[in-house]
Amino acid sequence: NHYCSLQLSHSHCFIDFQELAHVFGGKVAPGLKREYGKATVSRIPGCDSPLFAGLPEEFIMWMSHGDKLHEVPTGFKRVAGTSNADFVAIENLESKMWGLQFHPEVTHSPLGRNVLKNFVVEIAKAKQDWVMTDYANEFIEEVRAKVGPTGNVIGAVSGGVDSTVAAVLMTRAIGDRFHAVLVDNGCLRKDEATKVLKRMRDDCGVNLRCVDAKDRFLGLLKGVTDPEKKRKIIGGTFIDIFQEEAKKIEAESGKCDYLLQGTLYPDVIESISYKGPSATIKTHHNVGGLPATMKLKLIEPLRELFKDEVRELGMALGIDEASVWRHPFPGPGLAIRILGEVTPERVAILQEADDIVIEELYKSG
Image (tube, rainbow, N blue to C red; front, side, top):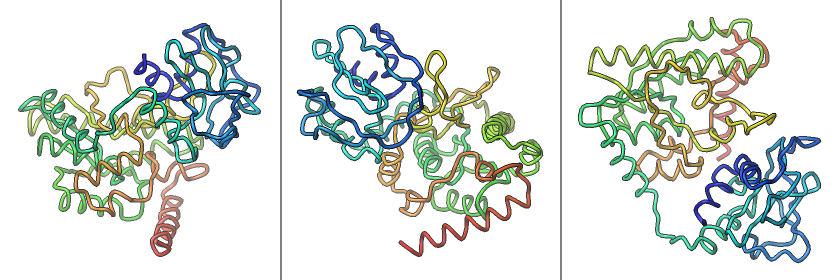
């Protein structure tokens, strides 16, 4: 029961909060307005929920939802609400199940860690003896068993912390049978392809090749102004290129059945829409738009991790600090930062501007 409530209430946060309510007879429907950002959560008078032990009567949490709970499910009671939603925390003490509408796992929820600790340590009685190297070792053993002694894996490397950690982890597992692909979509940062090739090949020992697909991407993006359409085009083209590269790798090294992706847990959350008329926050090229004909099976070692945990894993793997703490970069590249049509001229201007911003960030410490 403890595990079930963790899986439903926390692992998918607002998505499975609604599913939890739906399954047990509650009513989930769109709210009058979407709620995104910081919100003041108020405990109901006399609330003594063990989930909120040690927390004040009011506290700030991060919200991100369009649908909300309108009626509490059978066996549950309300323990907290906001000015926009009466039911943002519910519990069933008999079944040991809790549901949260807000995101306790993000840094924008100052006391979120306290809520998670109350659940995991005080309620579920989990031992605090887990370390990140255990995660790495478990993944390495699982991949070796799944891929086998001769199997090949293809994966994307962008140079960001997510793909870097995923690539190094896979390289530790199967060596050069992991074939990393850097796709230059014409929307990378200034000189990014050259820098990534040097860093990943020389410093991390990753078997990496670069595909120059600038013209292909920019041609498909010509005339497209909607950000969501840009994401779909870029995501779909990425998958097409991976499949093409897999065929080349098969011709060179043998059969390739698997595709490595650096999907993080927030990517999964943001790309899922709950049953009914709920809104998807955004699609993500790692988790959205995969074609039914895709022949490669996914391996996603970071799928259950948040960004800070990925960085911790990178440090545990011995990746240099500069790579682990690189400034975040959107999956679709600079294309998503360009308002309107993506053109080579606009990309060049944005590359220079972005380079100046990054330089100034480093100067400021």
